Amino acid sequence: MSQIPDALMKELKAKFEQKMKENEISTLEYWKTQVDRLLNLKPEGIAALQLQIKRLSEMMENRIKTLKKEMP
Image (cartoon, helix red, strand yellow):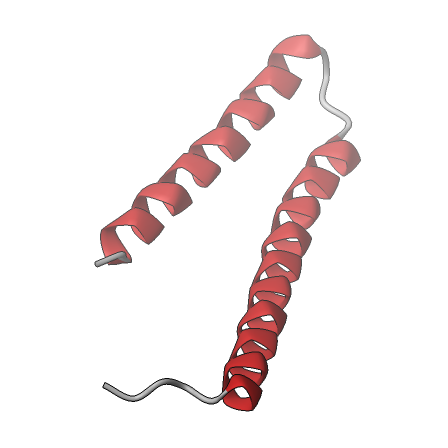
């Protein structure tokens, strides 16, 4: 079995880390948008705010389940 040259390994590692950062940024931007929507709603009391937070939590839970199903 041959070994991967150091230069190629460094390049692959750099590309992988860059892709991970891009994915993290994308994820954070999406959820920040969702939270910003909550801030802009100006609900009529704590119950309405709790309902909106619950919906956001459910969206996150559904996304996590979907991603876990896609994993090998």
